[in-house]
Length: 314
Image (cartoon, rainbow, N blue to C red; front, side):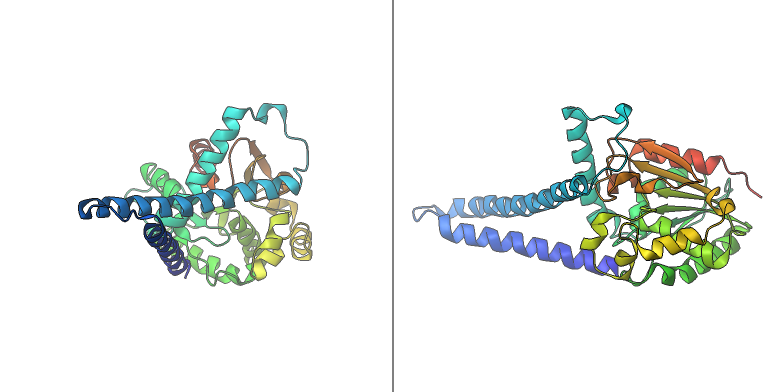
């Protein structure tokens, strides 16, 4: 379903760019223009239209950073993660490029089952976040394939459902992955809402089939920006929501010890950013990395692979 939405969104953006280009061409075309120059002029206006659409995407990305900043950063940012102008620019550019790639190229190519010949280690189940699909995991999938690790990217449906409604889908995916690989357990890696889906699955099905849960930028205590998102899952992800409080109350310390929470103190979607710190878990904190970029940043990919490699196969 998300793939169809992405195609529709791209078509709308392309249509808006062409409509703007046509309007500019009719408005500004010189009356004396030679016929041979007309195609070049039209092409230039198409470029202007595409640039205008791109600027709208830039404005949306800037707005996310502003909203997360206004929502508060929780605990003070450690001095080791303080931003200078160069690192702030790098943060924004990497997050913007990650958002563009994810919402176009990656999510147009859902992942599915990726079995490796002579696989090493436990298989990995990849759970995407809010308003995404398994295509989000393309960069990590390439790294897992090079490491010889079988993995499966699940597509959660429908996009706006309750987080609890995804738990049976996760269970079915784990059973399928174990059957395909002959493994008794899997490692779960979840981005953003995907980490909460993993916790909801644990509450319902228990921990027997999972050896480790690795979350990337998961709002374990919610995020203020969830107030702007549609769907029952967005309501559940609001900062300190009743659903999150009930989830936390249901968890034993043993379950929390299964978790590695990887997050950035400069996350532009999770606000406050220390909402990703999960008591009882192994918390791995980074800086100068945005929310979407967590799935393709080389430092985060290396950290996730290290966490996966640390788990012995049963």
